[in-house]
Every structure is written in C-alpha cells, then in structure tokens.
Amino acid sequence: MRPTSRGLLVAIAVLGVAVGVTLVQAIEAGGGVAPTVSWLTLVAWLFLATLLFVAARNTHQRIQVRRERVEPTRAVFLLMIGKASAFVGALCTGVYAGFALSFLQAMGSSGPRNRVIMAGAAAVISVLVVTAGLLLERACRVPEDPDETP
Image (cartoon, rainbow, N blue to C red; front, side, top):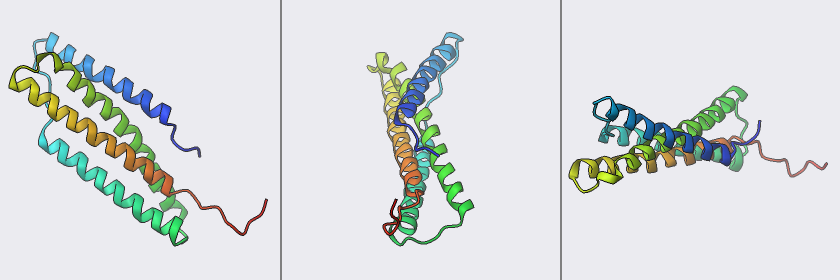
C-alpha cells in the first residue's frame, strides 16, 4: 500500500471548498439560512485530532522505537483509520474554508464575522485531523531491518 498522496489531499480540499461555497449559495438562494459551525463541532474535531495524535504517538513508539510486533489486523485497522481521517479531514477543511469564504464579503456585521471565525477555526482544526491521520499512517510502516542486506 502506498502512502497517501499530498496532492490528492489538496485536490480533495479544493473540492471541499467548492462544495462549501456552493452549499451556502444554494441554501441562501432558496431563502434559507446557511448552517453555522458550533462550538461543539470545534470541540469534537479537536477531540478527534487529539485521539489520532495519541494513537500515532503510541503506534510509533510501539512499532518504530521499541520494535514490538503488532497483530496484523490491528496494524491494518490503524492504517485505515489514519488514511480515512486524512481524507475526511481534507474534505472538511475545504468545506469549512468554503463556508468562511462565503461570509467574507459581509464581515462588517457581527453575525457573518462570527461565522467566518468559527468556520475558519474548524478548517484549522480539520488540518490537525489530516496531520494526525498522516502521522498515524506513517507510524504503521514496518521498519526496515538493519541486519538484512539486499
């Protein structure tokens, strides 16, 4: 399995921006009110990022530093969690950035300003989820055996 491509993650984030901007425009064109990002969302994303960072650190210590053997199904599970988190985090980074961009033109009033700040904070925290997912994926690599010669 190949490491997750950074280019693919950027493409997913760009797609997410388009989805976020389009979603806000479509809702407002239909006479509705665009969704806001709540504090609970920020806390949940931050909690997820923290869990992923802890899992990445523990996995790195176990596999890379102490060179312990890990059950293959557990390693694959952690690898898939890391990859999925990177993909979902990239998409959400884009969507939240798209939300923030949609409200930039009306930053003069407090409502849109709060929406930009909250969506921007969610985008930053989503980048942390991407980073933690990539670190978890990297921690799952099997270290090369220094005694083995090609």
